Length: 71
Image (cartoon, rainbow, N blue to C red; front, top):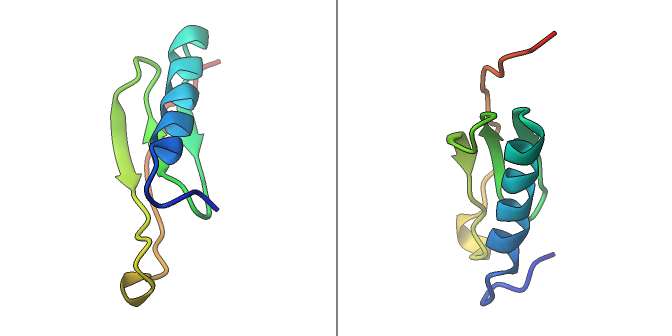
């Protein structure tokens, strides 16, 4: 997992977001211990789930998002 007091989780998410913009494709990112999100081809976050490192606040969650498909 990610170190709770660092920016590694956010940095990894931002790198994936940049790759989507570079390639002009939407990104769906699923992470057990990181940020789960749907991002459009312009890098805009459509929906996101951020994890909690507090064991008392951990709850199973699901993200439902519509992602445009291009031919």
